[in-house]
Length: 194
Image (cartoon, rainbow, N blue to C red; front, side, top):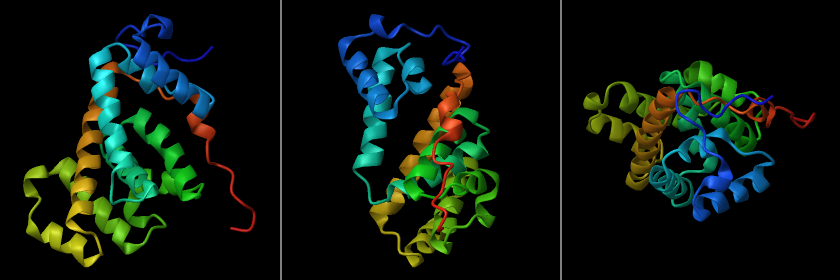
């Protein structure tokens, strides 16, 4: 039996949700082959579901960052916040988008020693600083990122992803969202030639 999407609030039945939420969930289920629990959990508050996924879409579709960079930020930020759901779910996405079966584990454990280039370490340093010490972010952080080739718009996007997933991590803790079993296995196989 599958684990509940969350344990602290009732998980709604998809058929009881408003039509737009049902359509979004059905599309995601068809695309993924399963329904990610975050969709079911946010269905508890339909207006929050809409706002959450609209902003998520904006962060992933209208960005200066590559999708694997977004997922690195999510995994590093979520690891800092001890968010099991987001580390597992977005670790799977990182493995898939980076085509690197070990990368998510490395980033979640210690991104500073992960198999990533210096510009990504700088990007993750910034995201983690914004997570842990937002008041300490200053011009030197911007200069560091710009020296590594990030534009002002990209820096905005790095900060936006980190900030959004700080919210997401806290909501996952609040609701006790549980990762789908499928996420643990996604993207684990690699091409034998790599």
